[in-house]
Image 1 (tube, rainbow, N blue to C red):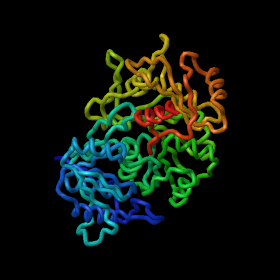
Image 2 (image 1 turned 90 degrees about the vertical axis):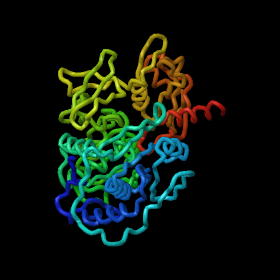
Image 3 (image 1 turned 180 degrees about the vertical axis):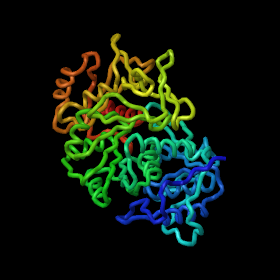
Image 4 (image 1 turned 120 degrees about the horizontal axis):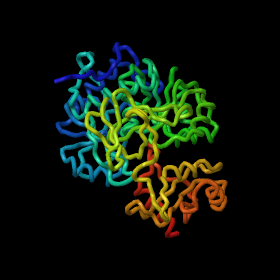
Amino acid sequence: MNMLSLLQHRSDQQTLAWRDDRPVSVAQFLREVRLLAALLPEHRYLFNLCADRYRFLVTFCAALLRGQTNLLPPNHAENTLSRLHADYPDAYGLSDHALLQPGLEMLAYPEQLSGTAGTTEIPSVAENHTAAIVFTSGSTGQPQPHPKSWGSLVKGAQLAADNLGIVAGCHFLGTVPPQHMYGLEASLMLPLYSGGVLHAGQPLFPADIRQALMALPTPRVLVTTPLHLRICLEENIALPALSLILSAAAPLSVELAQRAEKAYAAPVKEIYGCTEAGAIASRRTVEDEVWKTMAGVHLTLDDAGQAWAQGGHVSDRAPLQDVIELMQDATRFRLLGRTADLVNIAGKRASLCDLNHQLLQIPGVHDGVFFAPDDQARTAVRLTALVVAPDLSAADIMTALRRQIDPAFLPRPLYKVNELPRSASGKLPRASLSALLAGLQRD
């Protein structure tokens, strides 16, 4: 059985995390992992519901030492947890905040982990152990499980570090939750396997992001989303020196990447991936529209146009949810839109992703989305748009859209809203959009 180390740091005195404005050493982290592991009950699965990124990681690794699998739900809603618990009855939950879930054994993260943990040797985990089951966000349907072996997570982190040029000693701040595949890979596994340092927090507002970055030494890496980047730029927030900005979870426009690079004097790189395959490609958005896969990963298209990824850390062929155009080899590609985003109106086809991009390019639009309430067979009679634009009227927005998109895809109706029901990772679950639209239609 092949065993892989829990982390890549070379000394137990190295800093592994930054929490409460103080460094946490590798030795302290390993001690807390072993102490928590001793407290865990005998179950096969653990709902890891910790919001604090450091506590999440301690819990994640403690479960690995006990041979358990972390369940990472897309949200902490009672209905979601109940449905998943029914599928995984031999599970319990652990949370660092008040959370009661009927029928689920829940443990509170200990306020203090005291005692002697014995050896400070870095433990190893079986390469084929299912370290986590990550669930899709539910943006196009019900959450679906995707098991991740410890080996695939480790190899993915190593390939990403090489692909992105990450050096040892980088300090990572994430604005995305650790339960999300992007958050798990980029804000936890990447620092673990590049000799980096992770920040325990998950700041969402620009002032909080700035404050958290200020607490970190250099070099700093910001792991974020286009939504958070846009808000920081719109509020003209000044951030301390950054070595790199990583973006994923939603398409990033060239215009937004250019603004971010100019404002923060740091390269902005996008990560492309999905829950099924993990992170598989990257690009520097201002330089190239073409994506380059990570070492060993190659893409194929079947006769129906379905894209598949395999190789590198993707051991089993995994389907992609996007329509792609392959270049001359199987490692470079263009994104043409999401498979589920393609709509057909009056014999014309368009991608909702592209329509959203056109909407967000309108000056004064802070956020917005095109929505196809009737998406049977990817055919819609009409589209609806939900837009956050405090200083624009609906007529102003429609006038701007008429200049940019085919009349067949103009939204009818267009609703102005105060905010969109985005998840912590910036995604828009379909159920939340449907509920918001239903409320607007009743008003």
